[in-house]
Length: 388
Image 1 (tube, rainbow, N blue to C red):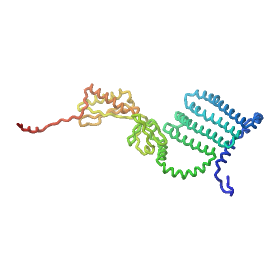
Image 2 (tube, rainbow, N blue to C red):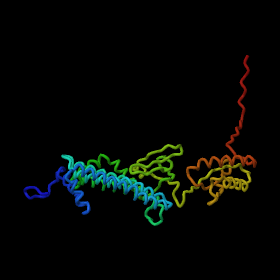
Image 3 (cartoon, rainbow, N blue to C red):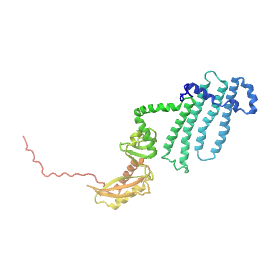
C-alpha cells in the first residue's frame, strides 16, 4: 500500500488487514460441486439458513473423520508393538477435528455476514485453529523424538541430544505459531521485529542473568557433561541425580529425596564430577580396613575379597581387589576396592560391607587395632606432711 504522494509502503491499518484476511477465505460457491449448486442457490438467499447448513455439514464431516479415519488408523497402529504411534495419532485427533469444524464456522460466518464482527470472528476462529495445532505439535514432537531415540536409523537423535532437539522444536513451534497469529490479525511482523531490536537491548541488560541461564542451558544440552539420570557432584557441594534439564535450570534429586534447582549459568561454570560418566554407569568405590601388626595378611586379603564377592550388589566384572596400602602407626592399612552399578547406593553398600567385615574378623580372631596410650610416671610426687 502506498501513500498519496507516491512514496514507499505504509503500515497497514489493522482493521483493513483484518477485513482483507476474511476476504481471503475461499467462497463457498467455489467449494460446492456443480451438481449441488442448484440446491445451494435455493438457500443462498437466506444467509442464516445457509450458515446453519454449513455448520451442521462441517460438524458431521469432522465427526466422520474422527470416527472413520482415525479408528481405521488406530487399528493399523495397534498392529505395532510401539505405543509412540498411538500417542501421535491421539495428539492429532483434536487439531484435525478443530480445523474442519472451525473452518466450517468461518465459512458460515462469511455467508451469514453478521454486522461489525464478521472479520473479527473469522480471525478468532483461525486463531483457535493455529493454537490447536501449536499445542498438538508441542505434544507430538516429544513422542516423535522418543520414537527416533529408540530407533537405530537416526544417529543424531540419542538420549543426550533429545532435550536439545525438544527445546529447539518447541521454540520453533512457538515462533512460527506466533508469526502466523500476527498475520491472521493483520499485524505487520516486520515492524514489530524492527522495534523489538531496540526493546531487546533494554531487555537484554535487564534480564542478563535469565538470558545467561538460557544460553547455558543450550550449551549444557549440546556439550552433554551430564544427562538425565546421571549422578553428579558439584564443586559447590551439591550432589545428586539429575532429574531434569530445562532451559533455565537443572534439577538434582539428593539422597534425602530433596530436589535442588540450580541455575544453568551457575552449573555451567562449576566443576562437575559425573559419577555416571565413562563407558558405563558403574563406579568403583573403596573401604579402608586396618588390622593389627602380626595378622596373617594373606588371610585378611582372602576375607576381604570373599566379603565383597558374596554381596549381591557388588559387580563381579570387574572383580573386587584388595590392596595393602601402607604401614600405619598402629595397623596394617588395607583397601577393598569394588564396583557397584549405581553411585547412589555407595553409602548403603559400604555400610553393609563394613558390618560383614567386622563380624568375619571377630570370628577369625583378627584384631582391628584402635588407638592406645600408655602413661608412665617417672617420679612420684612427695607425700604431703601430716597435719594435726
